[in-house]
Length: 127
Image 1 (cartoon, helix red, strand yellow):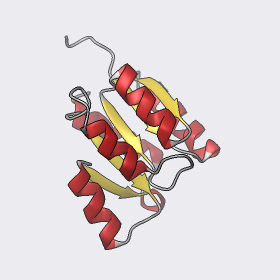
Image 2: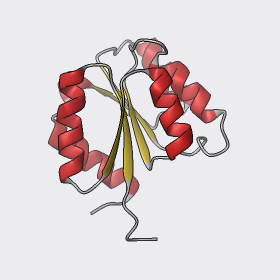
Image 3: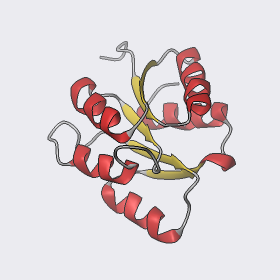
């Protein structure tokens, strides 16, 4: 359905960044689902089937890579686009994230929230 509202799951333990991202995506008419750690993110991804997931790596309870691995084990979670948004940018972590099924790896300090919204919308086909 073309008119179906797209949803984004944002998994981030930094409350200020979570609020900023929530507000930016909500302004673009997307349903925003929030999770404060990897366990909450995994549960939300598997129960709510978002259109796309934005995942931090370093989080309490379950890191973002482990969370993404578990999502990929689920039939419905296999094909949900995922973007890693983190401050961790060593080569090994980038490779692991991409091998786990993230389609993009972004360093937080390099992205403005408005540009991030634009990139996400392009990925999931929102004009």
